[in-house]
Length: 313
Image 1: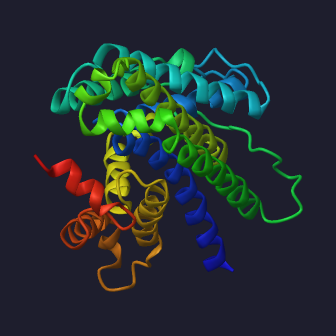
Image 2: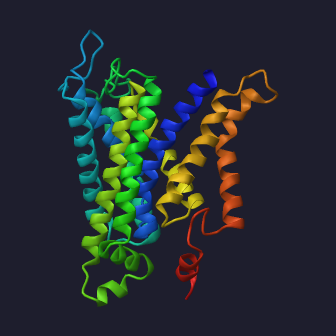
């Protein structure tokens, strides 16, 4: 039974990371934007939903004075919208930059948002943990709660997969693909590429905010250390492993990453090197990434023709 519970937890985390990967795939796979602020959008969604659905903290050591006790649905929707708006705000100031410059600005913006969360204790509890975040239908569902949440998360992943796949094959998606390959082509056809980039950034950030809301309402408590830049790099690895431009690949890559990271947390210390394996899981992820890049540069479900088109002169 313990093994089944472990699989449920890993499945839930994989679903939440899959949503993050779907958002990243819109930025990089569809539009070619080097976004390193994904952890910030994840944090904005999580903290917005947590603050809106919990009352203000009480007690002598309480620091947070803001809380609204709204319904969970309202909190998750608000977190999704605010994360999308945050993405638009960052994009407005940086989307005209190219390559490494865009990466540096978005990474700096993500760390700025995390530090604001860490320091504004009146709103977020600061360095303390924001606790007692409510769970949807907790104590009501007639089955294991983890099983219920697994179905809920993956149902949302399925809906997002269908929507984003359809969007990718729509006229809007084809413009994003043209921007990814060469800005000059859609520009010559009269498309406002800045507007399309802003839309891509906002939509991808909103999905990351949705993932943040689902994460907050599953883990009960959140803190700023949960949203370090390393999350962004893990999502990048997931998209690359699965295949940039493939939403199915993004989901597969995220599932692989989560399995590799989470399974090592539960290895008993009595196993030889068992007390050290958890510390080298990032090395394992890196090794898998290198192997995929060596044997399948386009990713597990990526398009080899697209890779060749992107690298040809």
